[in-house]
Image (cartoon, rainbow, N blue to C red; front, side, top):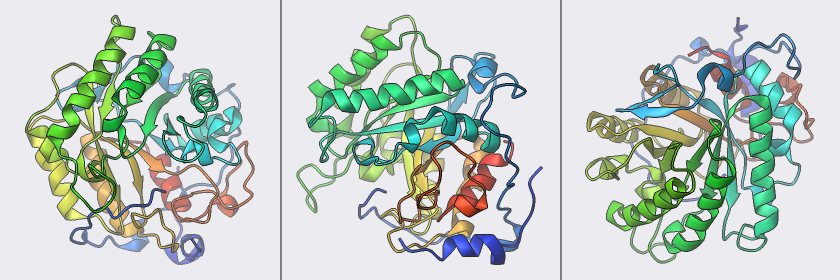
Length: 367
């Protein structure tokens, strides 16, 4: 059971911090205000990171996942919602929070996390193109940890220009699909946030620009593991916001979902309406990245829990899976850990930062 606290206490302490994905994602009208006193900020009880007494893991309970209509379902054909956290760009991961097995098991036991997203930077400084073996080793470590912990893992090609990287992306995902053929823990995200055709401030990529890329990469994944059609999540235009465009001409195939990203201080009812419109047309959505902050990752330290709660009230009743950005201890308010937080867990309120208290409570709530 969660302990209820007033936001004027610990939550405000976490919100007034100094500052992630930068980007000028389009903002829209403000979401309805939720009464702050109605928001819980979670429970500090520390159950540790051990396996004994924990019971069946999420993957042991739910097995291989599939998509039916707009829903993600488990091996028992029951609707299943993935809820968890995203690493930061792995090429800029200084401390290794997302690569630590004990920390992941602690999140599983204490915050009920059933998903971790491995965000592999591609062309960014120090990313996959600079050092592919290091980048793959980081992803593999996170995947192996997820398998050991019995949680799901989303392998993310973290770039805004993947449509120029079809050959490289298909090779990478083909390799990962082959390595983890038949492993129920593993899902794939083929394009983090599509943005512009050429550099910044030119022409936005449209769904017809993106669809051939997704088709090619899906084909590589299916060829590498034809007996197990893993769930694949497809990036959509405008920093993965225009899911309604994809709904007009979806990719043919099984177990496909579409990416919707939001940052609650800027993105409200207008973007929620796009998501609902896409679902009304039969699209299955996955919010693979979100923050209770501004779209720059919370550089100025602002957190908007009331607006983020409106998104929770949209996603959770519909079973829309989500991963919060980001699992790190940076100054930005999307980083939910305070600077110097231990690597292996034990993240009670004193170690939480930015959106951390809000995120903890939302994860601890049973869907």
